[in-house]
Image (cartoon, rainbow, N blue to C red; front, side, top):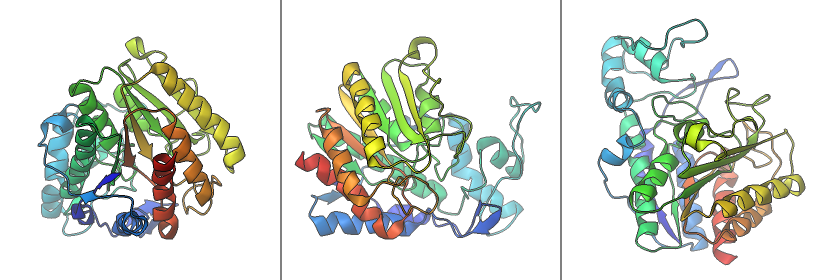
Length: 343
């Protein structure tokens, strides 16, 4: 299995995030990708290659041009206005407030284009984010040339980013960009399976009214868990996309014996859809000791997860998302890949 990796992820190296009412060191940090890469090498998973530069065109197939322009320029504007420290938003447009006007100031734009205060913009954010998108696109290009499977070791992650807003440590939606690129390269149907602990709200929103890209997600119930406002089981798509979105919100504390039947049902749903390619938003924050999650999967369970995904028997792109138990992150993520390879 070829892994795509870029050292440019290190440019997203924030100092604080707002979590649990405190400004804390970010749990999403460069060590995550470095631990993953180390495990890829340690297990002899396969070659590691650098990403190609695909330009902005495939990004703009998913993201609003004004939003992309904001991400490119936000830090330069922020540092002039405030100084050399992480940029976080001030407030958000909520009920009774207007959403049709984009503020002129950097504080207003940060608030307009984000949905949380846990995703700082730094001097290197754009460089890391566009590199991460290129990592995903390079993985997609490997499938396009005939590879059965590829691993895009993306950082920052992407599944919380929608067409015109960022959050949840995500700036550009890597999985969505790759899925659209697969469509543009000739795949008639693409399926996305999101196994991150947190619902991929951005991916769902991007494809919610489309039938050509199926979205399926197994995640913590939003009644209890971030992102709270999307991911319920009655969200099944809209318009042409009706019936092509399926959510499996699960309770805290779930273990493999209860998780596996849900995974099996999700994979059957995907199999019935008969996609030409499969994109996996690979979050392993379902691990029992993850610091911001409350599922109870163990490392061996991720091998079984990979084996189950392999049974779909479609060209498969794994796109890295969450997972914050850093010391076990490489073991758990690579276990999914090894399970897939050895199935």
